[in-house]
Image (cartoon, rainbow, N blue to C red; front, side):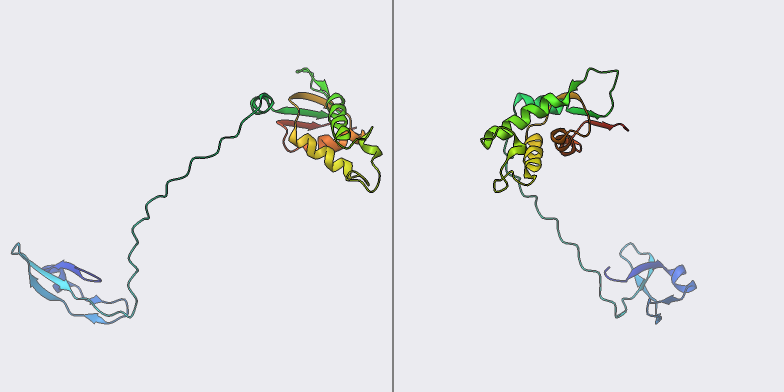
Amino acid sequence: MSGLQRTLSAAEAELTRHKCICGAELKVKPVSMPDDTSRAVVPEHDTGVAPAPAKRASKAKVKEEPKEYVEYTAKDALAEAGGYSIYVDCVNARISLQPFSDYVGALAADVAANFNLPDVRLAPSDSALGFGRWKGALAAAARDNPPVGAYYARSGDELGDAVWQALELGAKEFVRGVR
């Protein structure tokens, strides 16, 4: 049977009146079935409503191409395993902390060396590091080469502030105390 047809027993057909969704009364006709039982069929009726579209067969899944593998360094593996923690203006007495200024000093020296400067803050105004742009370069270098381990830092340090602010979101643990 298709559409809105349904099969009723002869007793059901006699006892009930059938209406379509649109309100029209339907006439029930008894039909003989192959198994010799008396049945009634409610006929199809034009409701003015379009039938639901047939579902499409699902498309075959496209095979994914193999992913490219990225070579990780030992520092990347350490960073994933343990990450880094930064404590600003506070300490954690339960773990051993390293001074953040050592990491910041080495990072600033690398950035300054890349631009042939004695200090990143001494960049001429017309250079790529001029007018405070050295803070962005230092932050980018810190995000590209994050520290491994736990560090303590003090706020108010011009170089350190730029670096720990850049690393704050990527830290496994970041704690800032109140001064």
